[in-house]
Length: 103
Image (cartoon, rainbow, N blue to C red; front, side, top):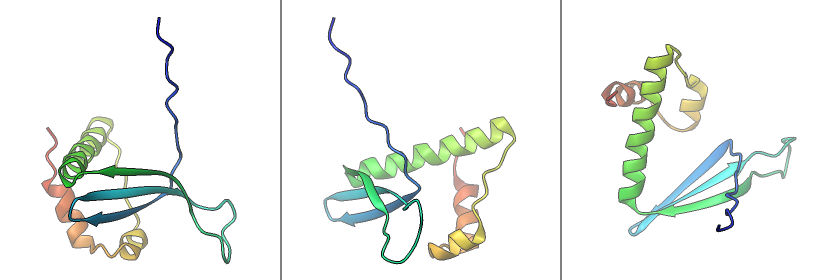
C-alpha cells in the first residue's frame, strides 16, 4: 500500500495578485500577530496559474459562495471600508454579485 503524502495546510488573511502576459501569481499572506511599524505580512504560499485557470476558479468560487448563502440563508457582507481600501466601488461590487449564476 503506498504511503499517503501529507498535504500542507496554510492560513491566510491577505492576498496579493500579480499578473503578466503568461499567467497569474497569487501570494497568500498572513498578517503579523502584533501589527506595528516595520512589521509586514508573511507570504505563506505562492500559487502560479494561467489566466484561464484563474478566470475559471474565480467563477467557480463566486458561484459556490452564492450557493452557500442561498442554502444557508446567511449573507457574508464585506465592509464598505474594505471595499474602499481595495478600490472597489460599492456599485461594482453589487453588480458583480448580482450577475453571478447561482446554478
